[in-house]
Length: 478
Ligand SMILES: *Cc1c(COP(=O)(O)O)cnc(C)c1O
Image 1 (cartoon, helix red, strand yellow):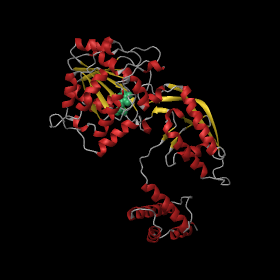
Image 2 (tube, protein in one colour):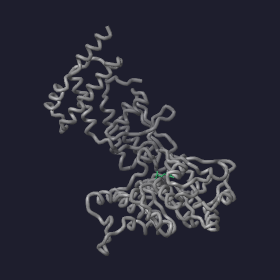
Image 3 (cartoon, helix red, strand yellow):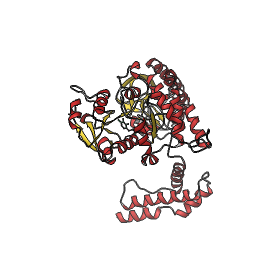
Image 4 (cartoon, helix red, strand yellow):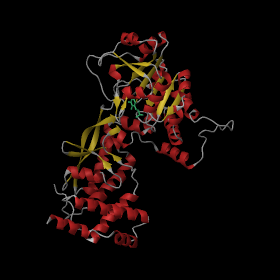
């Protein structure tokens, strides 16, 4: 009996050539023949597999239904996989959503770098070969007070090449409380092992003293390292050795010092109510030989690993053959320069670097933005969805202060005829996917991470979405 049904279903599968013929005649817009063929073959093969393993979801379909499936799959295949999204999560430095976004001025610099030849490695004065780093090195030095600077692919690469240069085959002393794992399996002990340095952990998880470092120093010690604990906090009875103390001890013993700052802010954000964090300038000032930080966390630039510090140490890192493997491209270089230039005027940086603007915008302004969005949404989708505004808490995200909460406002959307989980999922498949969060049975869009310039588009996208299930269409009722 069962066998018969299977055979029947297999027999009912459409013929590949026939389907391709229909699709080509239907002139699926501009779809290359090979895409049409691949889509048809895959869909039918998948269905055949399902039938063979008695998947309850398979059943007979008409040719018209099949053609509909093929067309949807072709459209999916032809649309870019890399997509812009609306970030309604309120997480400003959201690693999964691309961390920092760039200003119009900065993205213009990306278009210049891509569309034209440039002086990437060409010295316009001498007419000879130049160095790509020299274009940003002086700016970084001026902003941080460092003697020299270098930029590599990301901060993980910065830590890796610095350890490989300064401590290969030798020992690095780190506090137990700082052996951090950053998301995506970047673990300080593992990076160190790969770089050929040997880890000497000292102290206890919650407390490490200067004498712990001192006692661990041997002839084989190369470096004293401090790592920003970024994504976790040890609270209570704690103590760590400061950068200044570490430098004094290192100098006495002729050792190098390094600090992985993680986020590395150039602006003291405590003036805006954030917990006090050392700035890059302060760590450089403390005399640390090598300081590393990310380009796309609190700095608000492109993905990059910025290495600053003393001339000799940086020169040695520049000469490391790994430098070529970890080097940045012209897009990173042009956008990083553009962002760094904003920092010459702190007020401008706070306004023009989107990450900083999002972090420092006031709750009052956010409430106004939420109100504007609410009014626009109400006129478009009021019949299908209840729109209110509610206070909420945003998060800084990646790197330093990840869990630090910021008072914010959100659009609370309650669709009348759809489960929240279904709603949330559908918003993720919009032409510009909309990512929000479900909290206490409410779907929230935190307006902190939605730019003023995006509101009109977002409202249109939502209006179109709700418009596509005009009244009477009873699907998805909770
Ligand atoms: C984020 C972070 C890193 C990794 O930086 P990427 O730029 O993401 O490679 C390394 N160390 C610390 C302390 C961090 O916070």
